[in-house]
Image 1: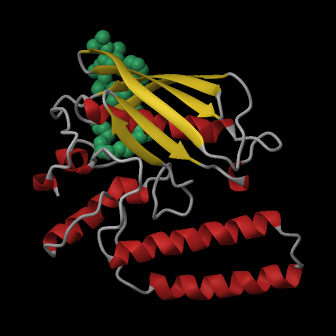
Image 2 (image 1 turned 45 degrees about the vertical axis):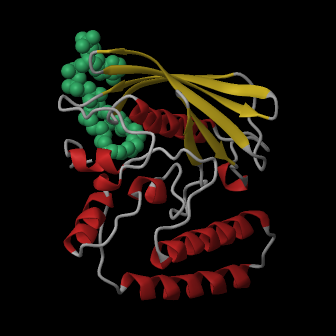
Length: 236
Ligand SMILES: CCCCCCCC/C=C\CCCCCCCC(=O)SCCNC(=O)CCNC(=O)[C@H](O)C(C)(C)COP(=O)(O)OP(=O)(O)OC[C@H]1O[C@@H](n2cnc3c(N)ncnc32)[C@H](O)[C@@H]1OP(=O)(O)O
């Protein structure tokens, strides 16, 4: 991330206080979520259907044509550039990380669409990985589990300051994690030493903890104060 010393991005990362995914900030971002859902459906269809070759090629051609329509618009690469564009137009920024993250982004088709919220001194998350995240037969890929942990812990840092880089993640995989059912995560801050935040999280399926994680996150030298649990309108 070329802009990782900018405090702007940190300010825009808020932790929801609701277990429900908030509505999109406007119709354009609602439409992005709808397109991401459609793309996930297409991917799932391809992965799970015994489709004939000709049909697969025909759909690929249609998708390329439709992608070209969207590509013809002005291009804006990355959250920072998009944030700057909206600011220059005096438009409201959505929570770009929550919309675009590869781990949780509601508007990013490669993300499993996680929701993270705060309750007291912990963050919780809910996510339902599917066949597109399969590792061992019928179970969740361990690298996807690492992604989910990294993201939940990263966001959890906002309870006690700014988001720092992941320094070290240590994961213990206790038992295979199922796919196609809602998973729950919970994370908290264990202690802070200087710029280091020691975080921990668990991943739960039904009544079993399938994996647990400890993470050390290193705050920037010009770190920000803790986030308010209430969205701070002045930050948008
Ligand atoms: C800088 C802040 C920017 C934050 C991010 C931008 C915010 C944007 C907002 C929202 C976006 C959120 C998006 C979600 C992000 C998901 C998380 C990721 O994917 S992050 C990508 C994966 N991680 C990396 O690529 C790190 C690569 N490594 C580095 O950049 C450096 O090595 C870094 C920053 C980790 C440490 O560099 P040093 O120069 O700041 O650290 P030194 O001064 O050497 O050490 C400070 C203390 O930390 C310990 N330390 C250093 N590295 C450590 C490590 N890897 N593990 C554990 N401890 C470490 C040291 O021992 C030292 O401890 P002692 O003060 O002596 O007690």
